[in-house]
Length: 396
Image 1 (tube, rainbow, N blue to C red):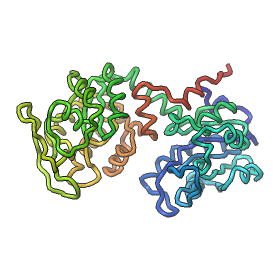
Image 2 (cartoon, one colour; image 1 turned 180 degrees about the vertical axis):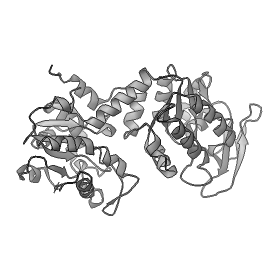
Image 3 (cartoon, rainbow, N blue to C red; image 1 turned 135 degrees about the vertical axis):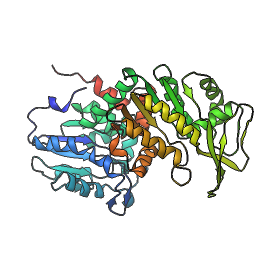
Image 4 (cartoon, rainbow, N blue to C red; image 1 turned 180 degrees about the horizontal axis):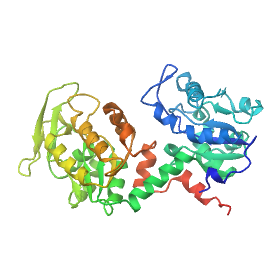
């Protein structure tokens, strides 16, 4: 991929930068736990501005479905970037307004939510042409949307000279390294609920990982596939056959006990051991809410021996006590191992939320901005917006 360092004579050049602006906002204020995503865009924007480029930062928030929504405006993002970049950041409600406004070299402007336009998610050539009026050079720095074939990720990259931003380069480099040439032992911690996104990752990591520790709804589905009665726990029946298959793999590590609680808002719970001779873990009105204390100890031992750690997905209902113990406990162990004894890579919205809840996010070696994009890379898939950058000829 072509990099920013290959860009020459940028003063006065209009550069379009696709950023990851898909964050939660309270009123017009950026939530503290969301700000880190915007901060990842600052190095690329500042680098271009320091070279005298006229920078147009573009991105999206939420899923407005091609309709304008005041609640999903990027106006608060422009205000936040003006503080972080320490310069005035003008905000443009339309492409036409941005094109006709004369900006000084070194200025960073923000365009309104791209998903207010129907052509964005459809990769409509007419919308690509409209966007391309903003500049002569395109930079993709939005790893989180690089698995999407949209106008602002693939369309612009095909139409204009295209380069990878600093954050995108780092994300791709880190994830390619941890799968292909990570320092062993490689331990993957996989939780969450969505089997359709996690099973391809598990399948791809099986030949590479020394241990894959399962939790959350992923573990519930595997337990159900092994014949355990898991009550109202999240189970995706269409994946039971595959779940049973991976359960027999030597490097798949399952919980030895779980925390069982009533469905709904009930806070009552009990710890239930997983025993081969006792198949009933939950009653019909109960569900597995977390990994148990014995599993925390077991998983911690695997993590302590690791030299590379990948974590995606919580171990249970970490959002409320007393079902957050397993997720927070493993977060602490992974944090202690990262930045030195092991290289820790974390991704996924809920996983990052759990890290922020525990105040440990700053201790991780790499926190990915992309949940879906990270999973696709870990599953061995190619990201459309990355591949189009690779296809561009690199000038020697």
